[in-house]
Amino acid sequence: MHDVSKALRADGATPELVALVDIILGAATQIAQCVRQGALAGVLGSTDDENIQGETQKKLDVIANQLLKNALLQCTDVCALASEEEDTPVVGNPEGKYLVAFDPLDGSSNIDINGQVGTIFTIFPALRDIAFDSEQQFHQPGTQQLCAGYVLYGGSTLLVVSVGGATRCFTLDAASGNFVLTQASLDIPADTQEFAINLSNQRFWRPAFKQYVDDLIAGDTGPRKKNYNMRWNAAMVGDVHRVLMRGGIFSYPSDSRNPRQPAKLRLLYEANPMAFLIEGAGGKAWTEAQRILTLQPTALHQRVAVILGSANEVDTCLAYLK
Ligand code: F6P
Image 1 (cartoon, protein in one colour):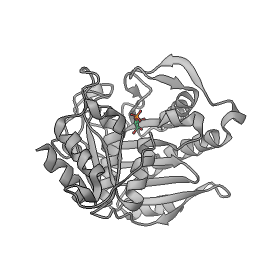
Image 2: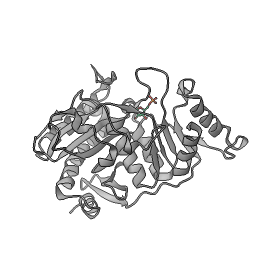
Image 3: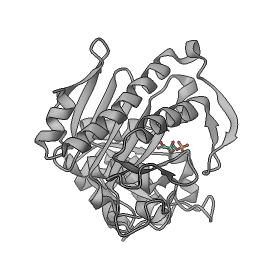
Image 4: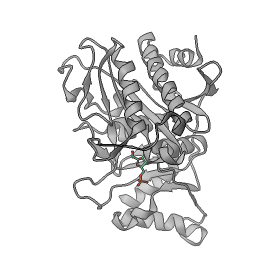
């Protein structure tokens, strides 16, 4: 048995769930090859299309989405899948036990600059009391996730995954094609001096959030009495990975740029899986008012404010917002 299967089985996953994760990893390994080849494979640049979010699709968004979709639809355990790149759920086997949701290539603005990108995924149980082809299948709170993870295509290709116990990290061994366990349990320090927030949006923030960030920037001359450093990857997957590795706070708060879209990140395939991983590593993941995992979804591509990372820093931020 490979490391991922062994670890997930030890964490209580069923053989069917482990097999499903394996299918996702098969597609992710192909995506990793495309990312590595870049211009040599002709996969850089944009298509002429927009996705449901109104974002121009990159060629690699489309390729990654297709690879995952093709692989998952061959699995009879998949009842339906949802993707950032699909307007509505794509139906699989009506009898399938699982729902899979994914952002096939998070951070796709980084593709053409050879920056970090990644695949984020989550698995929920299919609900027997709701029509298998209904979008309502996906309106489950994040606490119901059976598995969440991401594959980060960076200097190394990494898998970070949890089935509800520890958050574990594996590194893709290009020679064997296997993901090898490299960190058995990630543990986020409760305190931090690092933040990841897109400061260019500050004129659109709520005053209380702006005050929180002003106080971070004031460093040891302000009320926080310590200096903070800032990092911003423009790919949630890269920023959350850094937080998982060494702590920090990551936030994409609500803002007033577009009244019809007060938040940016998607609940189903961005906020929920990341919150699951962060909590599994001892961190906290909140909207501005509640734990992300307890939010009752109302729409497939619903967006939410996100504040996650080192527990004490998230608490401090939330105290400003009260
Ligand atoms: O999916 C949205 C996303 O690309 C995230 O991965 C990332 O955190 C954020 O948007 C980047 O936003 P901005 O364009 O404001 O830097």
